[in-house]
Image 1 (cartoon, helix red, strand yellow):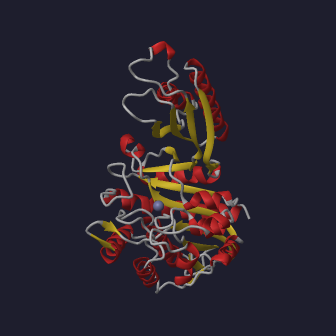
Image 2 (cartoon, rainbow, N blue to C red):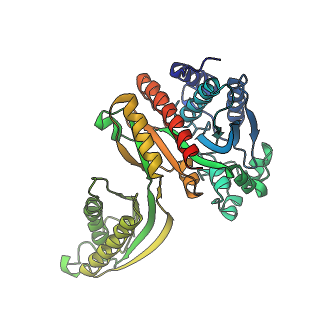
Image 3 (cartoon, helix red, strand yellow):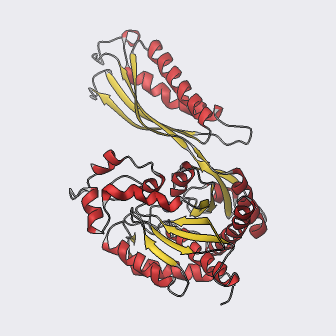
Length: 421
Ligand SMILES: [Zn+2]
């Protein structure tokens, strides 16, 4: 068998998958649906001539294993599921690049690489149907909240455990998938950036430092409703005024969170509800939501503390009360330094210049990293800086570059595993 990597074949396969499982509105491979099952069946056909062991684990993740001299395994991850009306690259690019790498490794090492290489197609990365992303990988990492997941219901009123039973998965056993990580020595994942950073830098590829930690809160200011005509400006307890000052402040907080490398966090006030919410009354109650993200846990904590202090200052200035409520939080998941360096090196060898960037969105890689396995991701530039949309796109020359660079990374990480075990 020829050992030659063929990135053009990956692009052709992405197009085949698109015509098989997409329509005029985009990709339709929502997890646990017939179209998703069709995509997975197709995927198995693509690797039928390789000497792989293939099985689904207890959480419905599919594992394609090429046994090596050592049991220590390099894991390559992706997800073939998509959001409804999704793009043609999100998730499946990672999987199909992994397929091409398996072909190259199998050819080069005559079916027996020095370490075991495993491609995993995670189940329901997107969480499009039940509103909970990273299902398969969080079951595998052990982080899945079983009580929360047990209660999830889709728009048709179908419970997650029942939907899983439909495709042969026993919900109560999904965490048994954790045994798949037993010999995992490293995990790598390729993904489209889904943002504009590489596009703005005019660079095709980047090494990902980790996924952002997130602090999500509701902040409610309580003032006093009063007639908009009869209440002098200096007598008001205006809940909206205090909340509105936060809008400017979060830009200063984000600016101050920048490190020496220029990488900072982001803050978003995503919603604002006023009561009584009529044109003739001073606002009595104003509830805003604040989403803060940073790659550095200490800096994330500082951003949160600064927002709290500012809200109290603005409340005092306006003679109103403020109340905070945590909606959700997740710790930053920094990737492995050695692997980040190898990723950088692979990119530079492929296209001359690399860039290191954090990931705003969460990925399956964050779950694997949380399970303590050395992890890194590679990003390829997204055109329009957009995804989860049928206009999601990446230049074909960049797709070829990413398969080449990702393959180099796989080879380097195999060497790293041998050296470190
Ligand atoms: Zn994805």
